[in-house]
Length: 280
Image (cartoon, rainbow, N blue to C red; front, side, top):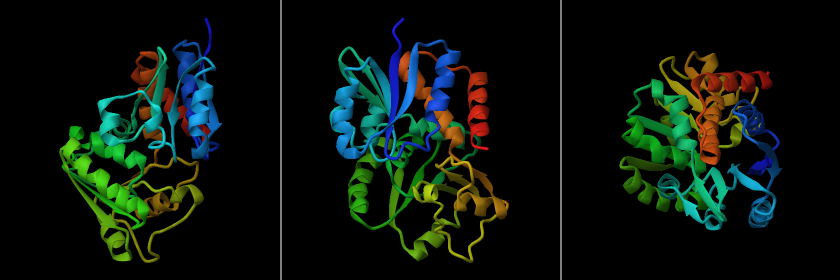
């Protein structure tokens, strides 16, 4: 059987664990494909997609900064991707490039399934945040607050939030990132760090800030070392979790989108431990 090609397109791409996850699942499920990482600057995305279509291409994932840039290049979007205006998974079938997002469901399956959160506070409003918001109502969340730096992204996000509020059937409040507003967000019970600052080891927490032990703190980043954000939560005795579980959960949903095969629960646990071990 001809081996299909599946890729992760991102910039940067070198810190991703997606190839370890997907190649493990492909082998265990005996599906004839190989998953690879491909560094893809945003200005080369269209050229890259055209090239892949000629290379026995099955599909792929999109990560930063391509989750919105890919939208004009796809032929079909699932309702959830269309509503979120964010794509992290594509499949090439019968000459058509079809797209969805698994970020939102992956996030809730990995974390908030166990917590009855009615309100969520996000630091940053990127593509993953939009996908999570889009799925939030399904998981019982009624109100989402987003802290965003007041640059061009803020005004773009402002327009998207209006449509998302309607589509996702929940209240969304966009707040300018100021020192005072950051302090306010950091006091909330359910807090999600969704910026890319942790990738560079940057610490934006005020020097005198301490988490409370009853807070639940999540970081979308899954680096080997805890980000400064999560390290502070750990030091202060708060519940904390990185993005590794989310990576597995959204990854198995992507796998199903490409192959039609469903990953059993025990295999997801094995995959999580494999990735966890690779970070140590």
